[in-house]
Length: 304
Image (cartoon, rainbow, N blue to C red; front, top):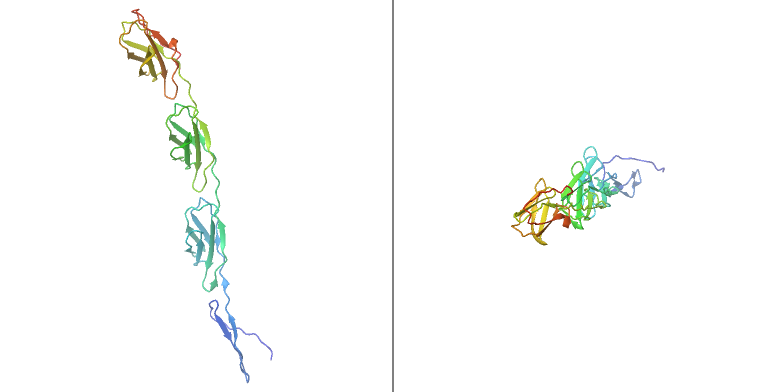
């Protein structure tokens, strides 16, 4: 008897279901049973779009109206719905560079799909930020960074609070007044990126001002007068003994009460402003109280 081919249309079967077939031939009866097992067909492999350390949402494609399963080592496996267009997403939050993501798809009556894998791309650090010129009269440091970047400031190795650069990249921070050569170090970062290298600058020490002048004084006066830079502090000594600090006005004029002094009393003065050291206290910045009744007020024109 020649073998022949046959086909039968049957409903879709589940995987691993056994199907038994026999045939009956006239005057021969029924044959032995032939058994086959329904083999599973893998579901289509889903796709994953690239993701970097600045991203917080994972996206990809799969079979429309199905589910994909997302596994990130160290986290609970999640399943998400694929929409009617075949798109799916999962909000993951920020992930570390190099983190592995594994996705597969499961469909009814099909084997699990092959796994799709990606590694989160680590974005590089930003460039080094800039520090503006700063000298010993400044109590605030300014600079430039990437807009929206977090700026980390260290002075003499001591960390100050972080600041955020504005929309133009401008940043500033109050650090108090520092002496010359104070080392300022600044770095920047953005979410998903490591810290940049440090930018380094040193505070410029401003030189001392010129010496203040002291008006001539005689024993009939109980006040002493002089000239210095505007808004300076003048330190007054009598016979080498500190008397007091005096602030000058907008014109640079200063004065203080000494009481009546004997003749030949030596008065010395020195001055400074914020961010500068004291000027020298030298003899040509001194006056000797005389018994001469004439007092002259003289301006020193070389104060700065």
